[in-house]
Length: 498
Image 1 (cartoon, rainbow, N blue to C red):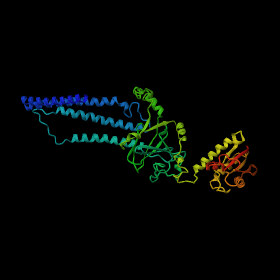
Image 2 (image 1 turned 30 degrees about the vertical axis):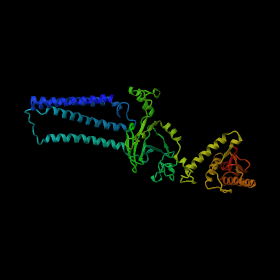
Image 3 (image 1 turned 90 degrees about the horizontal axis):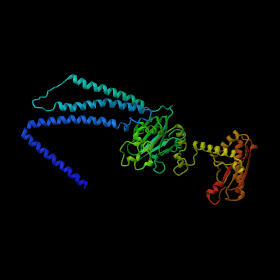
Image 4 (image 1 turned 90 degrees about the vertical axis):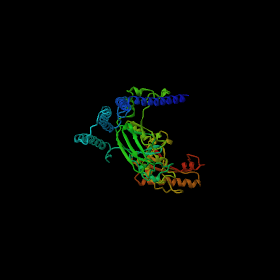
């Protein structure tokens, strides 16, 4: 029914306009064509001036009204070190182009009014005027030169790459339809290499080269977390189509181009919490986030910095929004330490190109694990708790010959005994129940002795060590499963005195 009423109204307006046109035609015939044309020219000229005034008032008033939701004004000040320079450049540009805009609009409509067609008026023909040519060439050239020079200065301040000696946090943003993968370096502070040929949607979506040890502690985060006051370098790339890495509150915007990595460097100056507190001072940010759900709280409480894609990259373009959180350096360190390296899920699986190979990161990790276990044993009161299982001492199947990688665990023991000269210990060997019990007992004794002999040959006093083989007599797990038998085949380090 509403649609029908609207249609009838539009139809009626059309009929009225047609009738008004016919009335004007009749009036023109009555008054004469020239008088009618003069009257129309006068009306048009007046309406053009009225439109000019209304248009300029609307432009200025709307800009003032919406300035607090335009970047760089009101509460949405830049949250990065370089952002103020960009905002200043835009403000200077707006100042000059605004003046030109207003002058050209006024002159355009005023000339349309002043020089409207009138009976008896003859236009003046001017073929050339050097003064005018100088004025409208020189003034725009000078203004443009000033703006270009200022723009180059800001560009050079904002876009240089980091010096190799600078302390910087480097992360990587990879865009694809329709999300971002954000990769962080681990404790080594370095991002590992990538190769697009290694991309596997299931196990390696970024194509990380796991033969490069720098990739082993890299992790992929579900949001961007950065410390305030620290310089950040973002590697930017894409896997499929053109995307754009856009952090509006930090004045960061750079295309993500498949096959052509780009970058941006910025330093956050305001934490998320501080920015929220600033928004709290503005009435419009104290309005409810959703009037239909008051429990969500106000707009300032729900504010988050964000990463968006500023290219129309497909139907799911909107879903590429990702949260950006700026925190204190201490909070950042805690957050980063709690993340899990992506390679952890790949290590020792069929997708691991380093299967069976030991890396420096593994050696360091095992040393920390050993140190933690020893510290607990030294502080324990019960004799049972003073036993540390040596998980990384291994022997070749059916023999007492140590594997090559066992030396790292053995070296951890040597360092411990050198640092703590009061410790004396028992090296215990254990087996599963497969095979003859006497043979198992003999193998366990031989293995314990081999470990003891290695430690002695590397400077540990013989009197501080005793080797005992227990065979299959002290299982810690069921021998009915392969996993249980694996747990029972072990070498232990028991602290006798300290």
